[in-house]
Amino acid sequence: MDDVRQISKELDGHYVEDLSVGMTAAYAKTITDADIVLFAGISGDTNPVHLNQEYASGTMFQGRIAHGMLSAGFISAVLGTKLPGPGCIYMSQTLKFKAPVRSGDTVTARATVTEIIPEKRRVIMRTVCSVGDTVVLEGEAMLMVPSRG
Image (cartoon, rainbow, N blue to C red; front, top):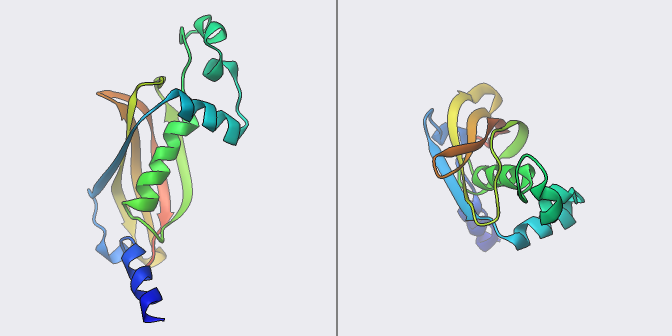
């Protein structure tokens, strides 16, 4: 039983008491064609702007683009694995899609603590995804974070 408790402690993320405004974490991934096809299959979003080059060439994007929610999923990776990390509960997320992401682009998702509400164990975080210097998505997340108490 002590082994299970030790493993659990090793998997825990930050407690609300450990957080401070300004703390930031990031996750980056290069998007592949396989990522786009797999996301279409998992989500059911088979919009041809994501899957059909001929169709997508006739759109304002002039070619295939990745699903916006694929990039948004990288925010979840930051929150659930880095900051606040394991144990936090995603409560809400706003999203504003600002630019397309294409196969071959490296998306960096960043989350920054902007507000802490310790009595409710809530944390507000600014969330941004970018490709190089271009912001492709921005928003705000609210999370419930474990407390030591």
